[in-house]
Image (cartoon, rainbow, N blue to C red):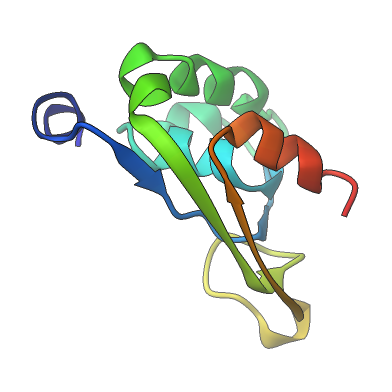
Length: 116
């Protein structure tokens, strides 16, 4: 992915979904970028009790190659997962949020949904 992103892509559209992650909590645009665009994301999940996502996510999304190319973030909140993600969702933890969110700034998108 790094070669593809650095050599062949001028702009990037980020398509996250509204979900819960056992380690990171609610994950939206920033985690989708950080864990979808780099390899070896296991270092952000070193154990079930250590959450390194708080340092890993900003370190990755602040890379100029990602920060400058990610120009649109479309969050699919039509159905959302509130427990047990990000694997195959258990239907009892899915709710009909029925919303799509659009932003040019992933931090603003994530911050704006923190209170929802």
